[in-house]
Length: 184
Image 1 (tube, rainbow, N blue to C red):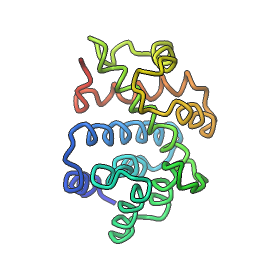
Image 2: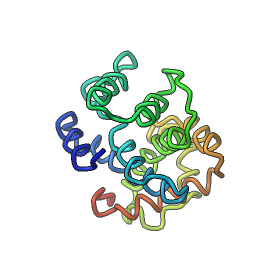
Image 3: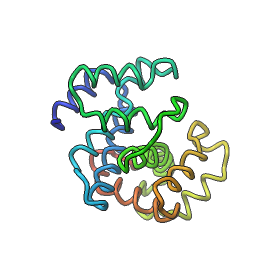
Image 4: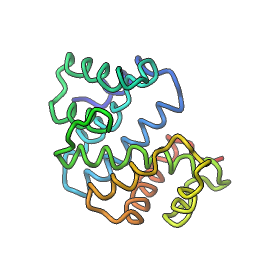
């Protein structure tokens, strides 16, 4: 697995800048958790980067993420990467058995929500903490497409406190803020 090859694959499959940024944000969170857990940062990062590979052209539950999964299988990606990607789509009912799969599920919706929070603040990610994010989570109309139950369940499955999880992911995104451009 090579990060540059994975990024080229993303660029071939995904034109939307916002979707690319989401995949980069998930990559950042996955890399940070890999470091925290002493896991393979490159593998975890690439898994995060590729998890929504097919979403732009194949967004329906009948197609996503399985269209992308088939492409990754064809390209010879490891089974644990493929299983983690399957596991992030709750409607597939695919078990999240590995720490990598649980982490991908835990960071996917949360990164989207944190990005939404950052985009409505003049200072972006700077100073954004769990208290502000939790307050926005209570506002149903804010980032309405983000599933709050998945955010809470993800932290539970990962075995981390929700506030700690939010702070950790926000910090991981701040590290990549230059690439993500998360200032309103």
